Length: 107
Image 1 (tube, rainbow, N blue to C red):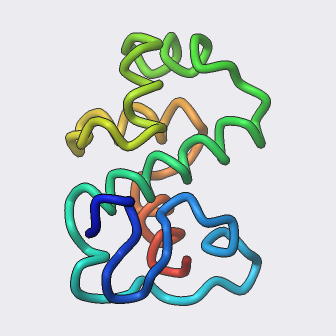
Image 2 (cartoon, rainbow, N blue to C red; image 1 turned 180 degrees about the vertical axis):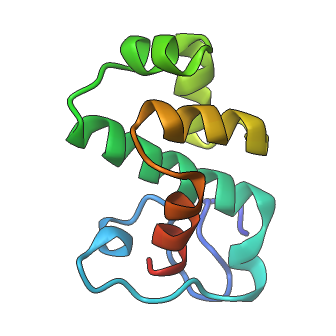
């Protein structure tokens, strides 16, 4: 990962819209699999899913049993979420945790 936030190997940003296309490319290997990069990818995906469900950050936080600032940090990739937190957030979004990771592997 470079200081600009782009992967050195594939030159993609974790927020790049093409990563969320209907026919996404698979996850790249190497630097892209860093914890920071994955946290940004997970956060961007959660933001998209939240907006698709027309939930505010506050409403999602309430349903997930966490705070709005925690959701903000999660969506921006500024925090690396635990599996327990991801489980609560995905349940609040009405999906399984495995579906989140399956979606990431297709992006």
